[in-house]
Amino acid sequence: MRITMWQAASTGRHFVGSRLRNGVTTQARGLQSYATLCQAASMHDLPLTLASCLSERFTSQARGIHSFPMMFQAVPTHPLPQPSGILAWLAGDEPSNVPALYEPMHGIHLPPHLSSDMKPGETKITKLKNGVRVASENSPGPTSIVGIYIDSGSIHESPSVNGVSHLLERMAFKSTSNRSHFRLVREVEAIGGNIMANASREQMAYTADSIKTYMPEMVELLVDCVRNSMYYDWEVHDQLVRVKAEIGEIANNPQSILLEALHSAGYAGALGQPLLAPEASLHKLNGEVLIDFVSRNYTAGRIVLAASGCDHDELLQIAEPLLSDLGGGGPPTPSATEYVGGDWRQAADSPKTHIALAFEVPGGWRNEKDSFAVTVLQTLLGGGGSFSAGGPGKGMYSRLYSRVLNKYEQVQSFTAFNSIYNNTGIFSIHATSGSDFVPYLVDLATKEFIAVATPGEVTDAELQRAKNTTISAVLMNLESRVVVTEDIGRQILTYGNRKPLSEFIQGVQSLSLQDVSGVAQKIIATPLTMASWGDVVQVPRFDQVANRFS
Image 1 (cartoon, rainbow, N blue to C red):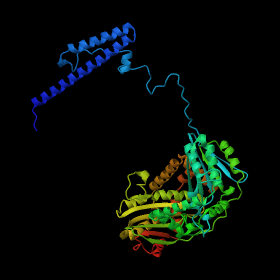
Image 2 (image 1 turned 60 degrees about the horizontal axis):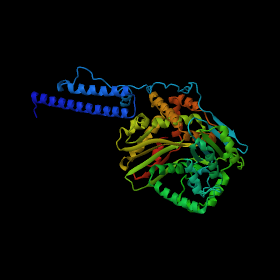
Image 3 (image 1 turned 135 degrees about the vertical axis):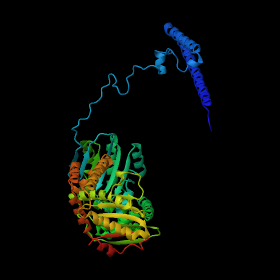
């Protein structure tokens, strides 16, 4: 459509004219509003001078509007007088005497800035006469986290009755000798608290958080649930039904299945026992079994009460009367366990095949230097799913991403992970693809293990990035009071004290390429453990894969 210059000019004049008319109408309406305010001022006995000035100003402005020709109203030759005073301040036409937000207010004294030489919170530990350890770290903030950590897990279960720890996790915060389950829940809700329990292979944790005002109530509630649980038959039966349903859900979760399979195939003894209650053991579990297990394992020398965000003396004053009469008992006798390696396969109706290759981490957490290197090694390998919307923080620059996931579209996931315990652990690569690609998938995992164990394969830039990422992840996690409390409790159970954070950072920063390749060589020198789930027909034979690492 063509538009002539004359048509464009006419359109422009029409637009300007309508804008001018609209502007005049708006300003006239505004003057009427000012006149109404002036009349109201007169009715409320405002000074005559103010009323008369307002009336005169509004009248002169009205004359000025009607005296200018229409063609000059777009750019008036003389600025119109603007209202001032109280009404102008209310209308926002003049700045007020209130200071701007970036200016300090008169008479308000700000607290001093934090000094640059502040030290991190100190972890204080007190051991009661019966062996219970009470530890805390004070930190600013409105909330506090309290946890009871017990040196008890699935490794302490009888081989004939597995799943006790799993059921104890489900039975946490049920009826005690002092509270019904209903009353317990209502008490926690009344103070806005949050409670949770977690069972693992070596330790059990009960935690609660609330605002600091209710810290004493949360400590008393936790101790009551740990020491005085009744384990009524109807509550146990109800939770066994839920455990059975949970087992059914896990059967469709390949990652959880493979993690359990790596332990059952790789370890002989305590660590080879299942953490999740086997369905075959459910009929053997009851309240009496739970009471017997708790009486043997929840002893004073194996319990740590840890807290974050509270004063240590106040915590000790509350906890000592509640725990000082608990029966003694030192650290448990180490359960017999041995890493042996092995193969586990389960066929399932799935178009995908999940495989995991794992080796032992000798020494576990108590071999501190190697545990630092293993942590960095996992970050170095990294990996993830075939789709990720993240950048470096999502592991996009890790070796498994850059060398596998970005090159082979058949690979749906390729991830390094570890499960480390006090004296041992496993390091694994978990991978997923279609069944046709499985032989190549196993080959890729094998090559990546061998590559990080070969001196010169990992560059200094890759190692530095992995070390920085590891330190960053730990520091960010420790900003959470929940993580701090767990770190205090679990470190005291493992080492007997809490290691300074600076020690971890220095240990990671001091790692060299030789340290990382050296710990990788130690890992792949142990027996192979292999687990697969799904369409396992084309998974290579175990001895063929194991020979690759000989």
